[in-house]
Amino acid sequence: MSTSEQKKIFVTRRIPPEGQKLLSQADSYNVKQWDSDEPIPRDELIKGVVGAHGLLCLLSDKIDQEVLDAAGPNLKVVSTLSVGFDHLCVEEIKKRGIRVSNTPNVSTEATAELTVALLLTTCRRLPEAIEEVKNGGWKTWSPMWLCGAGLSNSTVGIIGLGRIGLAVARRLVPFGVKRFLYTDFQEIPDNAKEINAEYVSNDKIAEDSDFVIVNCCLTPETEGLCNKDFFRRMKKTAILINTSRGPVVNQEDLHDALTSGQIAAAGLDVTTPEPIPTDHPLLSLKNCVILPHIGSATLDARNAMSVLTVNNLLKGLAGEPMPCEVKL
Ligand code: DGY
Image (cartoon, rainbow, N blue to C red; front, side, top):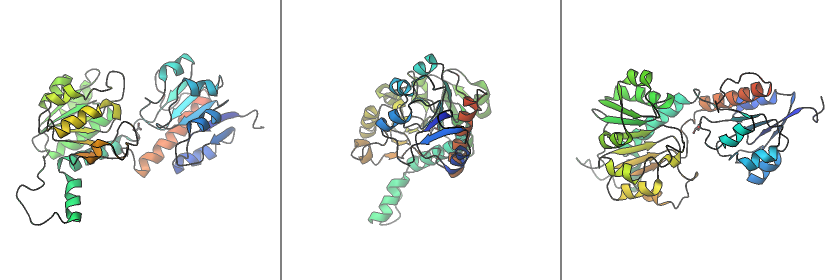
């Protein structure tokens, strides 16, 4: 078949090896790829997507009306290599009858591990401690030096008790957490039962938790949920962890809360924007630990995500059920 008869797939980045291998076997398609580990520039995305039937994108690619218009009426499937799909303009995609898929499940354990790692790193002040060893600040053993907060007997509040929230809570049980609270769009009794979690309001989660962990998806309802009012309600000793999406937390309000002693510390794997500018005020705070969105960054998880993304795309283009189709 000549390339003019083949359906076109446009891929916005090099993807992990296992998915890349699968893609290279899709020889009945005309696959075009932005062959780089760097994000595709916007103008290249607009050019590359023209006439595509399938689009494989990443969470750093904003798929909006302009991109959809550039793609034109051929476009049938958008397959994102991520669980979150807040970078896709879902309303417009739905209007055009385009199918969407994502990669849930395969990165749950990796993201939950990273969340617990970030929680322990933040509450036991590990970056500060490592820095003190390197800069000669370690003079002697000292009773109160670098004391942090422990998880044993604590109350943990989870915002979003879905797959990842539950996987985080499961890992925290052996640390001796006394009480789990959660909020979500609605009660999730099966998940809550497993860890004996109470469904509470946002106010209550802020007021009662020693550690608040954000694992929800970004929607208009959750955007800015952790704001001035939320921080004002939190305990002065409490710690906030966010491994979902940056905009769930109002960063200006967080900065105020961290510098005024309203809350003790924060650990963020996600920020607004990403990457966070190196001169951002949050980066100068000792009580704020920031990671570069590495929740799912294990080799296994990233390979599995890439395979699932390609499988979703190929099934969608064949008009078959996709392993993980997002219900729009
Ligand atoms: C996702 O999948 O949405 C994460 O944020 C990156 O793995």
